[in-house]
Length: 63
Image: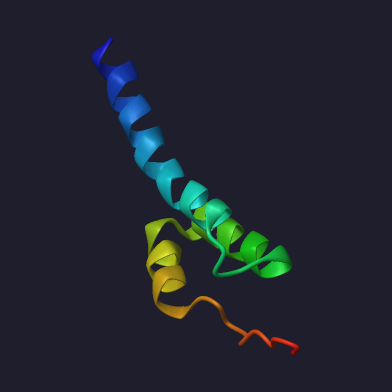
C-alpha cells in the first residue's frame, strides 16, 4: 500500500508541469506541444525553462 501511495504522489508531481503548460495561455499550438513533450522527456528542467523563456516567439497583434 505504501509503494502505491508513493507512486501516486510521484505521478502527481510529474503531471503538474504538463497540466500547467496545457492550461497556460503563454503559448499555443505547436509551441505548446513542443514544451509538453520537452517536459515529458526532459522532466522538470524543461518546465523551469518554460517559465523563464516562453513564449519563444513574440506575438504580433493586429489592430
